[in-house]
Length: 285
Image (cartoon, rainbow, N blue to C red):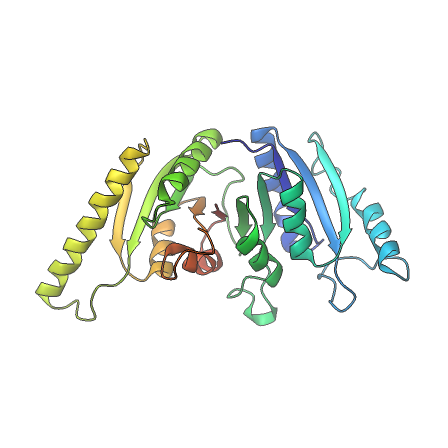
């Protein structure tokens, strides 16, 4: 597992600035190049909060103005790293995805932005599109202003769903955790089995299903050569994952986004909810 090139989409917002220590720590750990990337949005879109006014009367001038601004941005904070600064124009999500695809990006690191008073419940449209379409892992933090995670994680929880892509996710999570010096823990949540949990027969059924999932995933884990503890529990996916992450005092959650062709009901359909509610950053693979 190699991270040689980190793409850091930067929109001059307060949340973007909060990402800088995490980007620096990751780039330092992996000796990775960082591309600081900013996009002039289409004229019919409002510029991101925090982006200074750009000089000129047309998009080409705005892009040159943005490049001049980027060239003197975060010079102290990213000193000592190999940093490229790139200004672009167009639909921000599409440009981020295209740049990552064509420039060998191994990891995208960006905040999430909700909308107005609903910010804590929504993943911003740019981040949503990037999470949906990017081919490389995407690191996000929904509540960076309140999170107290260390810049490099010490405890990583990987939420797995038991689909055919799980072994690949397990190996990626194990390699990443070893590279950053973190302890890896595995978590699987079985959705609610019954509406009558007060009945002994229903509780027994629930436990049999939980044990079956535990055995299946333990076999999958061992076949992948992963030596990490696995917890299997029952509950609603998003609140149960986020509560277990909180109880484990995790500094990072790894989830699999899966492929668009995968059926609904698997963990990938809950990724946005986990990102929104996680007490720590989430790395979507």
